[in-house]
Length: 527
Image (cartoon, rainbow, N blue to C red; front, side, top):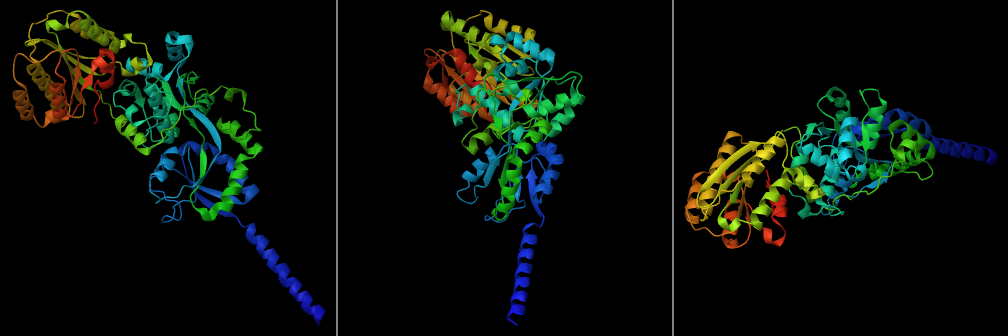
């Protein structure tokens, strides 16, 4: 009897063990929100299911910071995992959520820097003018401003890749060598660069798919190194793009896998272990051209180009959001109009006028510094110069299409025609009438006014009368800020009042230089 009982209990325990093992081996399906760029990994994932029993149900969607996706424990998650080109924006959003969101576990899977692919002829042209032939983001921005580079880039509002590219360019434009700060995000520095964008898409995968049909009018792509290598290997291009690793640094994406639902941690660990295994890393590298994170896997020959200066991502979400807002909709073609109201009273003779002319020459392309390349006049921009003394002496407007337009503008500034008096407020009133007409003609065009003077008003209308006329021009005039540049004996309080009344700000050229002052504020205002 006892033997029979022991046999029954033994069978029961064996059955329980078998049931437990079967349960452990049951297939698991995880819902994954993934960047569209990662669709090239899909053919390898059958091996994941075979080896681990975990299946990934992937929804490829452009969503740069997982907006609306809340990790479990904070209201539930629509997805178990997220697989992104970069999770930096999302992690900043979690950090800024005051505890409402949980920082998810994140595992880097592979790496690829955001670089530039240039048509060979374009690459040769840029290398010829770059020190040591090493092309920088500043060189790309300069060439975009003059129409030499016409590039495609994914929309940074929606794409991890486009966002990383924009951060890289903006960081290079700031010239600090560190992560972007609030004061580094100014709306003027990327205007020239943006003027060269001729192609965009919600994701860099869509961008790369569209590029072969646009090779005639787009000669550059800004995307991950991996995407450009894959495009070159596809045979879809007339001539492969030359991949340039910008000399002033790159943002490096690490394609992390995020655990949104902690209840799936065991399956998540199985997936990450499989992805990081040497054999999988080699397969990912060979198929997707991304660099392995597993140090035991040697990169292939084409992936051994040094990344160099890896640019840091901003440490505050507000900085990223302001940068994206300033850049705007890349599909919307906009170009600023800037009205320069310039003092040509006799006190400007000599060194001051030489500095003014040098500043305009620099903005026209003569300034080959990094900041100069980012701040220069650009193709499509409309520029007006109003020269004044005791009255308006001359007025000239050009739309920049090439060097001839810039020479015409420089000639206006280079001419003499000084006057003994300074009708400051009359000249500013004239500038606002020009600016208001521009806003009325094209409401979507950002318009700003730069006022440069070295003296006090002693002719024409009073400041009070200027304000009265300015208010009478509303509502168009309200969209136009004034950026006064203080020089010499000009009254800083009066200039500051004018800036405050019109939504601009004053810059003191005596603290740096007239050229730096123009770089800092030219056309810089929020849209």
